[in-house]
Length: 524
Ligand SMILES: *[C@@H]1O[C@H](CO)[C@@H](O)[C@H](O)[C@H]1NC(C)=O
Ligand SMILES: *[C@@H]1O[C@H](CO)[C@@H](O)[C@H](O)[C@H]1NC(C)=O
Ligand SMILES: *[C@@H]1O[C@H](CO)[C@@H](O)[C@H](O)[C@H]1NC(C)=O
Ligand SMILES: *[C@@H]1O[C@H](CO)[C@@H](O)[C@H](O)[C@H]1NC(C)=O
Ligand SMILES: CC(=O)N[C@H]1CO[C@H](CO)[C@@H](O)[C@@H]1O
Ligand SMILES: [Fe+2]
Image (cartoon, rainbow, N blue to C red; front, side):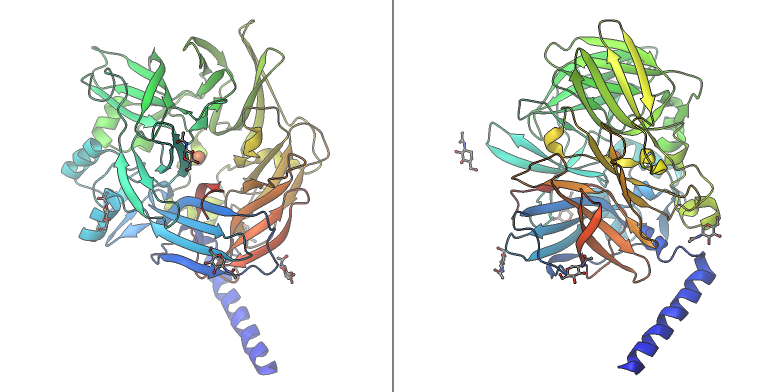
């Protein structure tokens, strides 16, 4: 016994020396961005303590799985091959873990050729594609749906449809039970979209659709980039999703330049889009075929805010301060105003910084600014005015306002709410690897909470409400965390009221960084 412990200790010490020597003190952080090629289906996992009896359903998450193929690798982490992971809670104290790659055309072709196949990527590959492959990539578009999963309800057929998404119009249908990939879907809408009108690239959309309150529909947007700017103008379309295939246009309006937008907001009556001055440069896009190299940021320009009436399609356009956002938190209407909360950045620089070479270099990854700041915008439609506040209400934990990857109790979507859960990278404002899970109270001061464990690296926290919910934060947070010292991932179950880990289950393999996910309570 003593002998084993001594050996273990020696192992840990040596391991530590090695890690310290190689990569500073961020034990295991790199594993978040290291390929894990294994796949699993229904591996039984054990929680150390018994699970809440009401916790029934499946958490499905999407994210990164593989960062190279053959001799070629991705330059930007966002291009990693999509890999789904799921945790199924059977409701009898047992749970199963599964993880599989999305078998997209991009993935299949890459595996078959043992090389990264030429499809459009956010950034390039090394060694780079030749010009023929670049052209091919531009024509084929993005096929790697590694950002989010979502459920659409198809009223006509009375079925739920599960899809994997990226920031693009194309989606993949998936099976949440076994994580298998079904088919790619490129929905058709209206006559004047998608090939109906020559010279448009109907490409950019959102990986974050939102429910349309009071209906089974969802809302998203689609940007139409004109390839013949002297002939036709660019446009943004607000789209109603009636099923994975069935879409309708709520409104379409011309824009001078097409902004990159990752998410937006929906209230009972309106969709609100923040178009930051971060525009697609069409000419460069045609030359380089790498979206991240082809977006121009204007730090002195204002942000255009589009407010579309969901019922009438009527559009209102306003402007506000220069701001960049990846994630809107929530929005709602109150006393004639629209409240929109978002996780804001002073510029998109942060997104560009998530390149592999930066993530693997402690000095470089600690050098860029990773802090978001929650901002609350109040839109007065009658007076055509927008104002905003940040750092309100005050908090004793100064970094809870710096969260991104915001999630809320979805029962409070488009309604007045208080609690946002999120993660804060660089909690100390120094080390990217110092990641804290936080709870931010947008209503009252003094109720913010944070959970930080050194060498533990969490992804987005998903809130599952207790079905007999008594308060907004009555439920659990499910968070995949990489334990850098043990070099293993586990799923943490956190009590949102205290932000303490109630229990956890270590997994048979590492789950690399995952972006977004959802809990489907009907999948058991
Ligand atoms: C934090 O980063 C600094 C360099 O910026 C490094 O010296 C230090 O070891 C890091 N600490 C941890 C715990 O990773
Ligand atoms: C729990 O439920 C799962 C799925 O229905 C089933 O396969 C398993 O045998 C059950 N285990 C126990 C201990 O009841
Ligand atoms: C990828 O290959 C798998 C296995 O052969 C197949 O089931 C799947 O349909 C293929 N994906 C596409 C998009 O063709
Ligand atoms: C829709 O399907 C559910 C079961 O999946 C069923 O209970 C319900 O009656 C169906 N509704 C209609 C209108 O067919
Ligand atoms: C992390 C955590 O809270 N683990 C607990 C899970 O449940 C077992 C059994 O009750 C406890 O011993 C662990 O401490
Ligand atoms: Fe996102």
